[in-house]
Image (cartoon, rainbow, N blue to C red; front, side, top):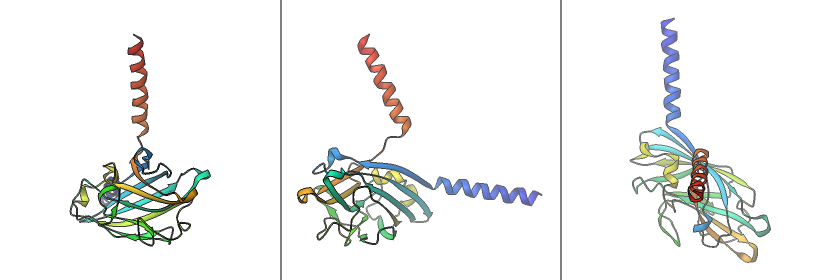
Length: 209
């Protein structure tokens, strides 16, 4: 009986420890910082610490651009700005085989700096050729990356959205040949939204008083 209880306790502890190493955050496009204000998206970032210097990032992203304007999501790149510059990334699985790995060190003008990795048509962020193989309006894709970093144990899902340009998305193929580059941002938690609403109500009451 004692052995059984000990085994159960060990399993429960392992489950709790495993859960503590993984988290998921929701994100959305920050159109105020986009180059043309044409493309928009939503999604989730899932992070799992695998031990040592290894982790796994899962990106689920949906093209939410206006249907009337068309447009295809053709690439995205990310970085964890709070960690070392040697963070490396490699695409290991994807729901869309048209997207290939984008190596670290690539740039995304006009946004500053370089990125740790990403995925895009032909393995390129700026791209060329037909955008049609990309994610059309309403379409979603899931991409899993192997991450390696000296400070990987201190990374969380939100680390990839810590700065205003830590996650950037490329759109092409809008009406009249338009394109866009749009950063991502964290979606405020429901509790934060509620607090903002309460603050607004209290502010109005103070002004009335």
